[in-house]
Image (cartoon, rainbow, N blue to C red; front, side, top):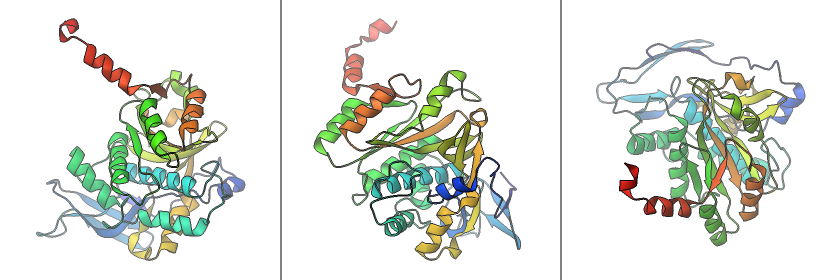
Length: 345
């Protein structure tokens, strides 16, 4: 991707969204591309040049800024899956901290402004903050061999989030379950956790592929059901989108899916306090709609499960789903251990 022109302040695709919709979605956290953050050191030898067209001029970003320092100060062109995953996790934290009934709910029994500021701060583009693009890309390189500047897939993005959550004791989630290639939930693993941690919720990230070039017809009805909520489990979004263009889907309206688009650019230097950062995360110009026919079949689906009752409730709701399945990990492992290698010939 040698030469990309990206325009700031694009108009939202609002043809299917009413003024009431925009009001309803104003508190959804929508994290997007940034420029001018602290350099992301890169070990890649590839040459990468990027022209960014601003309202007031043109600025060029390079990954070889000098002979002694090489890296990125923007994620335009490669960071959309990271931003979509950040949005998913940020809204999962929001729904949990504010005790919301749904992800688009605006009423809570908590301190909205204070909680939202504390959440936004976790996603600052600075290495000292846990969900920064710096920490995510470092884990992506160290653990999954994804170079900084290369596109993340849903599975790598989910596992990076899992590693960050497991390393941060002060976060509200201290467990994140990831299914890297299916919509499988191991209920015995979750039941054991809830027995020991009755007051702690679990973030579940299910990475699935629902077809080759588009979502297969057999998954369509189950896909729409993914957006449902229970009393003790909450849908927190889908990180996926169109081919080579990740989006964050968080609601459905009739036959349209509502998304936050990370392909909008903010200058990080201008977001110098948390209020400005939170305002940027809430800006509705990043909203759009799509139909299910437009979606790439590879995606990550997120839920917060609050307790053992939430797990039971979710299992009952999705018992006929063609996407989400519930299995027993110990039984599967015992079956594998009992297999005789000679039987495979």
